Image 1: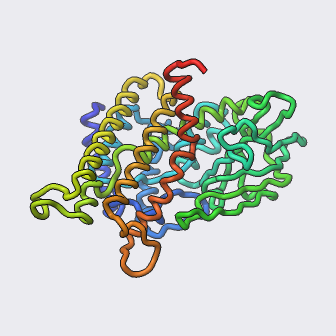
Image 2 (image 1 turned 90 degrees about the vertical axis):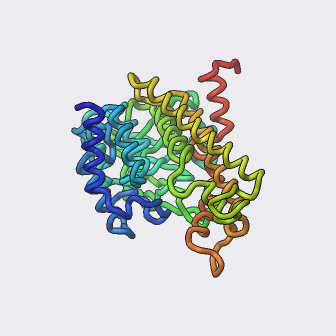
Image 3 (image 1 turned 60 degrees about the vertical axis):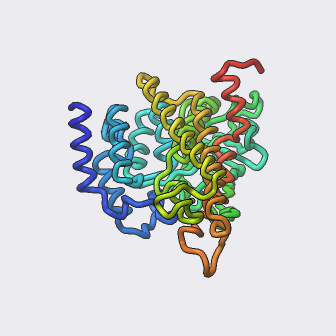
Amino acid sequence: MSLEAFRTETRTWLDANCPASMRTPMPMDEYPGGGKRAQYKNPETLQWLNAAASKGYTVPTWPKAYGGAGLTPEEGVVLREEMGRINARAPLVGMGLSMIGPALLEYGNDAQKDEHLPKIASGEIWWCQGYSEPNAGSDLASLQTKAIVDGDDYVINGQKVWTSGADNADWIFCLVRTDFEAQKHNGITFILFDMTTPGVTVKPIKLISGLSPFCETFFQDVRAPRKNVIGHVNEGWTVAKRLLQYERTMIGGGIGGAQKGKSLSSIALDYIGTQGGRGEGRLADDELRTDLVNHSMNDRAFGLTARRSFEESKTNTAPSFVSSMFKYYGTEQNIARFELMQRAMGSQMLGWEGEGFDEDELTQTRAWLRSKANSIEGGTSEVQLNIIAKRVLGLPD
């Protein structure tokens, strides 16, 4: 099938299957994360998820055997473009799609792929990440959560922190130390286990935004089957680094660059107004107008760079160290976007509750506060700059 024929077919399918409410900006309380405990405030969220999953469009470029649509990279681009045309929401989000799924495709054995990938594609399982620890953040290889062999299991003891969504997660992909004599980047193993396993305790962390997406997670004599090791024992750092590249690609492309919903310029006009009359003049604040234009140009350049990178990597779809560039620039763009929005909205973006603020303004306040973490999660901006210097530009230490 030609790309144009595929585009026509895709457009027809989307028009028939994407509900009207799924063509609007996604509220924070309607994110379709899936999982066994998922509750859907909007019934059309589940309707859209099920329709997309049945078509393989939650993971369109994955093989059909694992719940994907088997699309080529070029067809995947067409699908994204057609979804963008109608402002369609993502039918499913989460670490299953963007992190552990791609890692399993690359490092998992056949049994592991058969067990986990179809459940990820259908939204049956919600995953969380067990990487950071209280004393192992940017220096992740210093992690101390230990796993000791006992028969067919590993017995795991330790603590993780910033485990996003752990209070709702069904499974976790976790880094544990299996050799305490090896150098710190060695002796680490990548393993999966069920979050309902006895000995797992989760405590949400309340953030400045008022939400609790992050958690502390404690393991006390948790038993994880040895068959759940991904890759090789004591060589989990290899899998971990690759997964971080997938994560950084997701963060950079997911929250940086062009945004759905109202443009910054439109928001500024709503709160500041124009010179010469509504719809006929220019944004009244000259300095803000210039900054908005610059930000829009940077968004466009970022999007074109991402597209060029995709075109150059058609023969190798796995992310590279360039993912650090996209993560750094994308997150800095997103932070700048919220700062510009705050300048435009003024005190209307500083409300927390009560009269005088509408729901969208209160949502933007919390999103602005949440954006401050963008430069930290997935590896700090400083870490990304070091990677770019060493691995992309080839600069000396």
